[in-house]
Length: 154
Image (cartoon, rainbow, N blue to C red):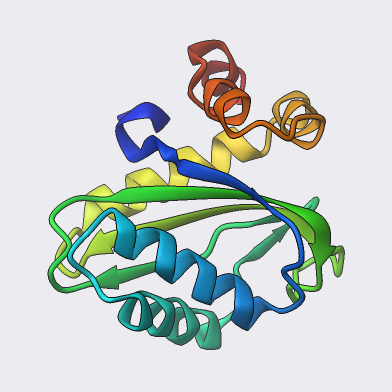
């Protein structure tokens, strides 16, 4: 498994004007709905339900929201770089500007956990995060995220 298998080029965006976690989840729901048969509200609600169990802000300006949904056939990712960092109740209390969301089938089991571990390892790479923060172009962000050298260094 690699990030290119989880993330499509059109699933990467830079967003201005997101002012709340709820608004971010709505945007993620819309993005996921564009790539699946899942309704935007269903995806948004699944992210909010998971978030109610504990914040997915992992520190260093990174959040990894994730959810399992019926009707999803494989683990899929979405990446958003926020132009303005957002309070996310992260473990280090730092605002979040890099968001990598995962949606998985309800019965994904180990695949969901492997994908989450891969994304977590990758996003812990400070060099990769610096490159992501320095770019506004979704095509460049996708290339950075899926470059084998970046994921190997994580």
